[in-house]
Length: 108
Figure 1 (spheres, rainbow, N blue to C red):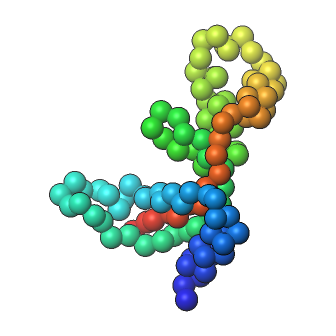
Figure 2: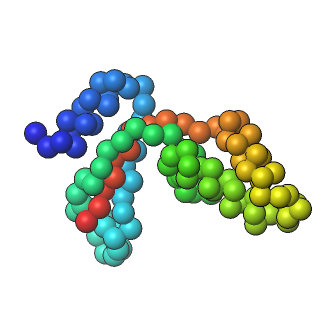
């Protein structure tokens, strides 16, 4: 049995309450002349995610980076020092409504 399938079975047995989300690499969906595209599983993992502006940010570090980037581009935080921004990111991350899921990554 494929190691990815074994991982998926194990994760779903351990976490039956979690959604399974497929993440498809843009290269798989390069054209728009088909309804379905063939891809291969590149990885499977359980992780947290945050959905913002029609995009899914996966993993704690990526969520924190997204928060930081948003603050750095926002005029009202221009006067914040780097340390103040990092403290805000840590505080806001703790109150962010992120969820947990099992991700299947599909590539070419």
